[in-house]
Length: 230
Image 1 (cartoon, rainbow, N blue to C red):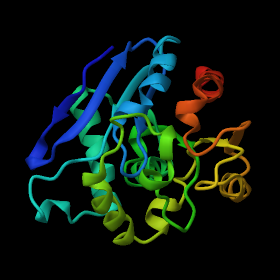
Image 2: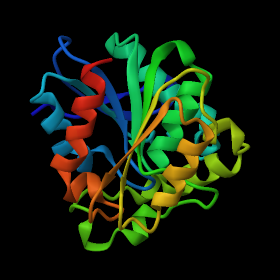
Image 3: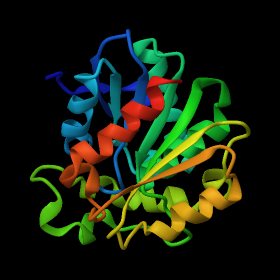
């Protein structure tokens, strides 16, 4: 199991884990709002076992109050800065709920770095609240309340279309839990209807909002199947 590292460009403390080999597809995973990268570990490990390179990138921890005044573009830049740091030029970029919104911002701002977008649940117009709604399904140690306010402010400071739109020609794989009330099935279906030629949707039967934790196999299998042909 790879250790968490901290990349600190310009005073930003960005946690990340880089594991797997360069022989298979590379995927960046970004956690949900108010959560750290630890809870995505089982999903990452399942994909690494299938020869994927998985890079989990967590939310920055600003060194001062001023550093916490950011936009979704800044959080997207954090992801690309880590990719540069580890020499990862191109990857599928994805995330869980809010993490998926950051992934969409990455694809819009840095189109040349993104082979596709992976959305584990699709955020709608209303912000999700993983930190308070996840309840007992959130693994111990996964909560990161310190960054929750920063992430909310970043989304509030950024026009919706600058993080919710789809980058041109980029394929999108949506995986969503059928029992997810925070990022409901309707959100993914609506996104697919907006671009049916390049948005694929896979349902995780019985999965709630924390389906990447509670249904690891059902989450990893469609990623393996879809990205292996890419």
